[in-house]
Image (cartoon, rainbow, N blue to C red; front, side, top):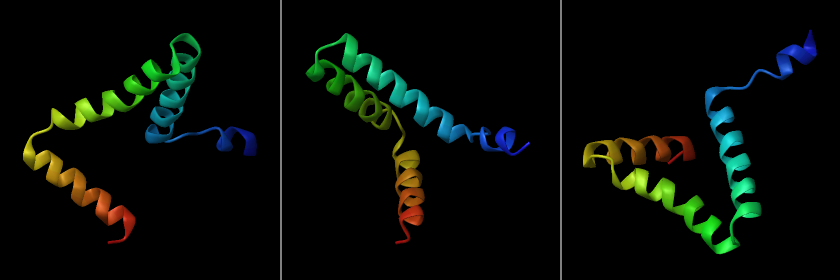
Length: 68
């Protein structure tokens, strides 16, 4: 039973694991600079598509998590 409980992952953990897997596949399949550009560019583009109020809410949540 303990092993079954240990394999349960949160939604954020699954997203992070998927991101790492995609990043590793890109590093193998593409030149390192292209993979790095994609890995950094996708989150930056997603952030820029947010409304100013959504960006502010995201920054506020991030500061709370950091304990500021």
